[in-house]
Image (cartoon, rainbow, N blue to C red; front, side, top):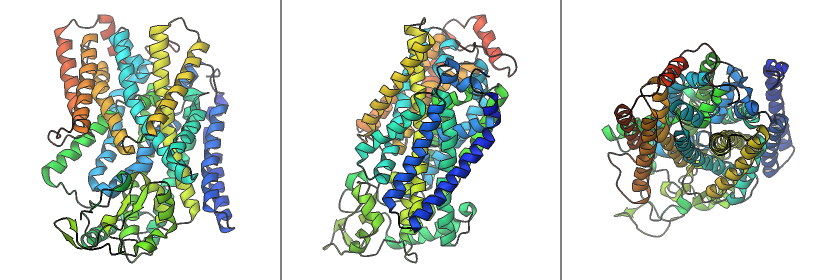
Length: 621
């Protein structure tokens, strides 16, 4: 252990992060004092984002290393509690922090399938994969695939699937960081994505997994404070108490009444500007209704659960613990830390929506003069960066869906357009909270997006450098060369992801769902059966990975880009429901139709299931 991190450092982690938390709270207090003394919102927003990014970069620099074990798996010395925090930060991405509450805000309770799936996926991780992959002793997910099934071809196919899934995911995180930076720093979104990328690379490039781990612990502390504080504040102001998680049912009922009065679901005569979304659906009832709504909820949850158990950047986190037992404990801590945010997201969406709709609250805007609404500072701020629009397009009366008469100058429900991705970020301003809370939320959102992007970029770069370059192209490469290649790849992939993110091909939540579906379609059954079915062989794994991934990807193309109507409600967010059965059937049929693995491989699988003893692979393989 001494060759990686001093033992004293590991023992002092509670004190170190306790001091860090206290220092961050002190910084918030200083920002609040500055606001009272007249400091502008722009100054506070810039200070929040800049201060936190500088702290993360400093941790990344101090954790720099040229040791393979430290770079790839943090020296396998991360205690379970802190690995749980790092995993939670890795997991609570821009989608969780920035976009999830927005999805619930606009789409209703059907979006809770994301919460159920993402959280429930950790049950699969804990019971089926994490302890056994830790016992295996691999550096990356393709490392396990390549060693378990034998040969470079399975390893190469796993690298491709990992790249597609993780790259899709990382573009969503850079999208989120660009959204936050564009608002906090008052710069165009296309510039904001590059600012976000710079912060991400500073955290991960020099220290690899070691740097990312200790940075993610710091980022979790920031993001959970930033997410919970506005909800508690709004709840207290609206009369739901300081712990709204159990008491916001009355708010849901109030929203249901207001939506009926305001005509939620009424069509507008113009298309949403910039692809924005109107408040068309309700929090309390899925407009699809019935069996189809239940089916769509269940299938989305299944895709998110199996995707969780297949995503390489999450599974990699459990390679960093000291032992198999620690890996299992780490999953439990991960669930606790993730629960704190996910349990809060529906309350945030509900209370934020009430702020906009309820005429008894000073912050409501529906039914007020459009001129007055457009003069509000938060409306102007978000409109100026292209994330919100108010369009006086139609009076209340509609005839056959066509506007009847001249615009009336009053804001109707169908004239307010907003990107779902900004609901969390805009909530403090919507609720009229001090701007220091907006700065705090921006810092939290940046922490969430950066922490996940760090893990994803590292997963891609490590797979390419270790599994493709070292294992296939140049097995004789020395440590220095391997790590130089990993860092160059990290930068190159980050730049490519920022370019793609700047195109805004889909929303944050949509891109994340695709990533989960890609991973589940190609990797879920080869990973699970690799641990639990000794008869699974190389040919079966190749068939399962290739056919499952291609089937899911082709279905995505058909329903998203070729205009095909979804089968049985399986839309582009759920294409793993097509890919996974193909993967399973192909893997089982081909494995049974070909020669079984060698006795040596089958004995290795048996040993992997034993939580005691040494790891299967050596520390530097």
